[in-house]
Length: 517
Image (cartoon, rainbow, N blue to C red):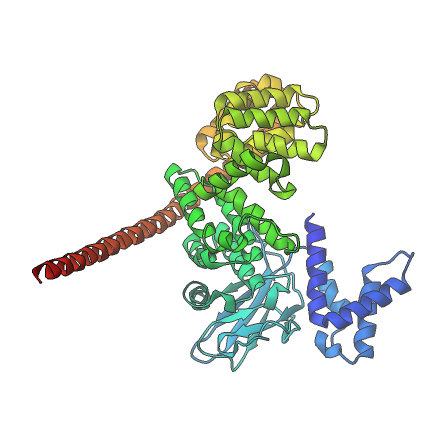
């Protein structure tokens, strides 16, 4: 999967470097010339080179052969980290590249890429700032420099995140970008670059190259964001925090933080009603936000799903069915859950049944979940792995219930062909030494399955290690965020009380004055 993602990203990068016109002409020529033939990458690169030469546009590749540039991307593992360090006194910028690693770096790795570099300067912003995504310069050595650059304001590299690399800025430039997002006009930064900033900061924080507080601080602007891509990128990393955070207070504060971020402009911008002519990203954003908001107990989401389920069960839009079914099981009574179960048992089509199954899994009633687990193990039309994953993904109650059910009924569950995947699925959501100890005992008691159990235990141990490293700083930031929200509420209440007293006093004085005359 990673190889396919890299291939698509590298081709996208090339399309922006050579311009859309050259890209389309080249692909047309390439497909016509090599139709029904076996090809190798150099055939495609030669096709690009030919069109660039015909159009006298080889300067777009810095007059370097396309094959030479692209081979640096397709013939070595990984992708680069571009480090940008500004001298705010001279205006010089130092650039350096090295291979990006999420684990320990390989000291002997000498990978180098031909990196297309472009940038946006705060002082030169206009409507076309992000439009031209060709390379301003190329970095092909370990280091490079840009001279006569602005000494103030932020600089943002990699327009529209078209280049396949991460960027580490110096601390001051990070702060200037954060200030633009949170305190100025966040729309001045392209939506893809906002996504890149979020993804890079959380990725750096997760491997210890940036403080988690800095990554989290950068997300505050999202409560005013109306575009899907930055929101989706943020939720990917928020999901990781939800999976790993062990501190119960921090988990509660995470829900408060998420509710504050998502329930304002993001949710208000898409509403709860599908429109036939809307962009697919808007539809995805609506479903994603509703799923998250219901999961964290948002009252408006609760009202929406219960009202929709009880009044329009047969006409719920397909893309919202899983959200509504889940909400009905989570917030409803036995009546709603039984209605879902009846619908599940009577439906014969796989896709609707899977949505109903995922909905049933969201219940936070122990007896209903026990019934659900029993059904998933005895009903030949239910995939046990799908069923267990549905309960695990439903939230904390589902995770705790699944962990208890697996450890209590392991003799029965270990016979499943998907037991390894089930164990890994629950392991990603476990994060304490007690969980590790439970799996250690499980492996000792079930030698015939110990390898699969130990593989899952290693996943849990990584979550424990993450909490050892970040289990203090992340909760502290979340607590500070929630405290600031509560302080704002208190200040608003005081202001309202003062204004109300002033109004009542004015009315009283007016009444007394009229009585006197």
